[in-house]
Length: 318
Ligand SMILES: CC(C)(COP(=O)(O)OP(=O)(O)OC[C@H]1O[C@@H](n2cnc3c(N)ncnc32)[C@H](O)[C@@H]1OP(=O)(O)O)[C@@H](O)C(=O)NCCC(=O)NCCS
Image (cartoon, rainbow, N blue to C red):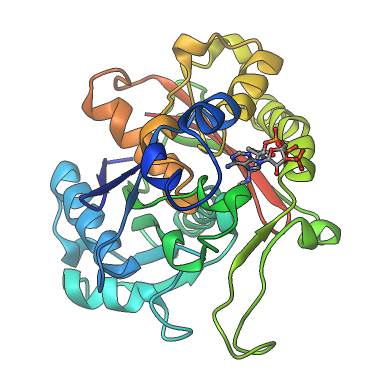
């Protein structure tokens, strides 16, 4: 990984502000989710705008120009339009005209899915340099009258630049060491958007059975994490940082506990960002890299679960 960058919209929405709109409280939200505030995109600010801003920062950190990119994946469930892919606008605005670009949709697991996809392209030799972005404007698909969901999500984008390099085949190699992806479509009704071009011809709103999602989360996340750890031939005690999807502090802490990783080795941004779906892992990564907590050579475990139901993990040496 050559570099990462993130972007958050300016507008901060606190729990206190939400408590004026729906029957909730700062205390309830903090206690049940760990969220204190989230960002909301400005009127007219699109998912692609957030993605472009994050990508420009990631490219600058990577020290390469957009013309070096072979491929761009935008992981998103809140695209600008039904089509073309949000990634096409990102490609054009960045001036990455050599790159093919497409969106990938695995909801909150989107970044892990996109990372695994880019990894496969790089390993196959089809691409040498890839830009992987998680970008969302979930504020646009929330039912702002449903207190069970509107307090949970936020907007933002994060991006990473990947370049294929020969490794020694050892666990000390830098980059993506192992990935694991899972889907169980039988649970699609637990977390979904009740609209779409082919069903209702509307955008729809997010619907969730929170308690049920919660029930699946820790078991699935610990399982996929254990799989990548085993696949890479390392031990859970070798993991320097968990960089988890930021849905709920209780899910983050429960998964870390199951893996035996102490909370001071877990990157937490859910308090400030809420759940930014596919953007949450790269935003957490940027937060920890830019604050100097994650250092080159450290072993990172990324894990996520989302609508679909989808879940997965990636083990990355930074
Ligand atoms: C949504 C979530 C925070 C709710 O917490 P919970 O402890 O499971 O709470 P429950 O859903 O059991 O609801 C308990 C009560 O709180 C109420 N409640 C829900 N949201 C509330 C809010 N924002 N403020 C106050 N009360 C709220 C419910 O109406 C319910 O009241 P009732 O018992 O009178 O019906 C929790 O289920 C969760 O985080 N689930 C996972 C969601 C998630 O991460 N999704 C994204 C995955 S990518």
